[in-house]
Length: 530
Image (cartoon, rainbow, N blue to C red; front, side, top):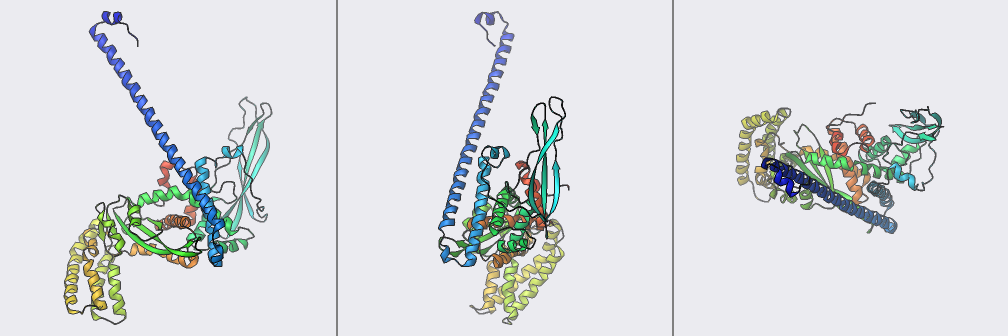
């Protein structure tokens, strides 16, 4: 609005005020619009920088992996170590390449049509396998000009799938419809796949992951099993499928980690695993850390974190700014964890009991037997309140367990004065007395368990895996194992069959909105309609 001085002079004061008010309003709106554009530009610039940094990181890791792959001192490795190194190298390469393609936008059909990559020659899928045909035709075959299109051909692609103990082939037939008048062609697009342009379906990738990380079947044995059905799947191929599947599951793993850290009561534990060092041709010790929501939590979940050591910095980095009650054993690495963010320590009575149990079984101390009897009374109360609500559990503990706990404390202090220093029973009593406050935390919080058995049971799959794998082939392979096992073990906790869960989420992840990723977590997951 443009006004000259003469016009303003002729206007009434109220009209002038109204004009200036509107001008100020328009100016304010324009200023806000400029600020929004600036914020959007800054946000876009940050996203570009983040993407460039991630591209650089993945490209570097891919180059380093190839250098290791061709420069590793394989002559120092045993046959089994060499085989593990080759398998995990193939997994890592497929994992990194999938992430790199996603960042560069190379996995979309449009990008792939510009410069088709040279594809390796594959064996044709065996003719004796059952074919399940899926016909894809356009919903509308009427051309824009009004003419009815004629079917002029079709494209056929085949993907290998599996029902446990039975391989079969999905045959996708995408009809081509063309208008003879307008030379217009219509055809259904190819849906995205976990292994881009590969033969395996999400079901077969899920089966490979479950066989590896749930059933602990090495790739060379999976190759032999598949060969019995007349299907040739080299272990390098199986490893690359697992790598691509792991890359697809990363957003879901991060959502699971966020879910676990939203709980106010956690269990934590760690276990060693051997990690192959390709440069030295031998293995070194790494650790898997486990964090689970409380044993009484209505939403069960566990997340594993692969780390190169057992130092306190690993749980500190994983927990971040989490605050609450953490149930763990007496490992000194947790001491630094409890100095941060108002965290409370809950001890494990099973650890304390175990020290007395070893002495009692050896017949080395009658005091140990009496201690076990006193603890057994408290454990019986815990069995009775296991299905109670948090408030009911706390009330019963206060009424019945606290008096028994105080009696146990007084009795242990008296017995400690009687037993000589340096003996096994003295060490067992000293451990309990030193950890007394942490061991009794369950008496004052109905959501806290009496021991850490919940997380110890969730660590058993890793003990079984160690026997089958012997070691992790690389740090990335260890991280991928932690990620897959987090999801399948949480699926089990929620009553889901691991293969059915992984198959469904792998089919849906590529097209599922990222802001609704929580819908695919095990506690919220429902199978897709058949």
